Image 1 (tube, rainbow, N blue to C red):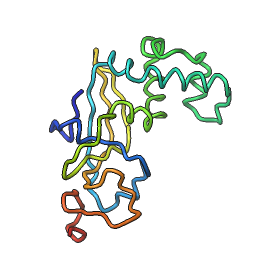
Image 2: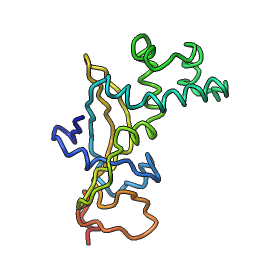
Image 3: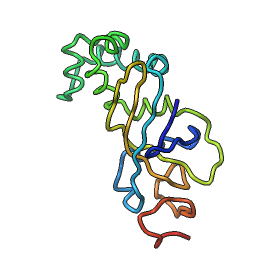
Image 4: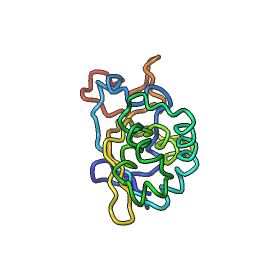
Length: 170
């Protein structure tokens, strides 16, 4: 798996998913949004998310309640296909379901142990899913921060954070 910030490859250990406040971009208003991409073999990606997706699919079939969510309506109308069938015959729907389940999927693929670095890249969205030959590319927004949880519930060190201004640096 390769992770790029802009066009620069980073150590995969530096990319983390916040356990709280994922995708709440207003919490990052002082930070510079960075474009990221995660590139991995499609086969490996599908193997990694297979258990999660099977549980998700079973729950959707059992509940049979789309709650007017377009992705779930399309999934139901397609007959709730298994992951392998989606990858083969319904890639557009699979892309939508990856984005719909992005928080859980990012936790699965970025599940390495938290190691001590001076900073992390907090991955906060999947905005685009691309299938390219035998590769899958996830693209979205991340932020460079000192604190992996990044809840703003207490004062955070911002020595290594990539801020829009230097006013908050300590």
